[in-house]
Length: 272
Image 1: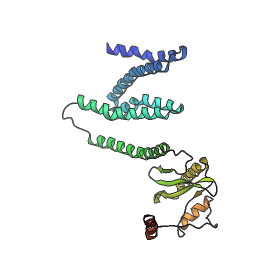
Image 2: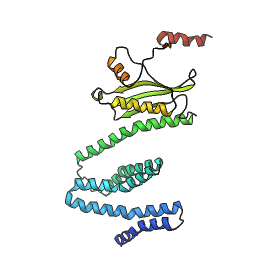
Image 3: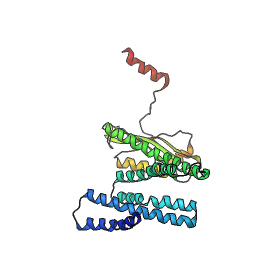
């Protein structure tokens, strides 16, 4: 009886499309119909991959089940990207990850046989993939948190100060902050640090990273990108020259206050 209901409910997908095209149904109604139409489709994908597993073995069968089992979330995410709905994309992918880690794993622990042998190699692989995903998500999450915190404090994109770390596969990093020049009457970008892993140098990665920084400066109306380099680092100097950067040989002198001098100057506030 249940299988007949599931087979019959496959008609919900075309019915939802017809309701959307031919009636003035609201968003809530369409959402409910679309969600219900996914249930039989998910069931059909599940039994299809189970039949495939009978001929391909548990390894490939499990891979197919996991891949096609997440197909609805991926399809929703693709349509949401096209519609410029980042919150829907995050919700869909997060729901997929959470359901696989908690719901599926919990169901296997409850329904699985007691004292069953665990495939150690497969388990270590899955844990490693989850750990790698966590590492890859940490960096953009930190950046988003810093930007949102700055917005809550009234710092917009054109604010006098902003910070960002660009990370590309843990190979290259650039740290910069925005400032404002009262002399020029426009914002500027100061490149605090740039690092390219030694084995990635000469591959063009550093140039592409600085191009990204230059794009940020241009989009934010900065009059320049400034940084410093050690006078003995000839390879870096040659690299910057090839990019079109020029050393600052004007009338401006850079000053640094540090160490004991910094402490003495700060102590004068307490004595005043």
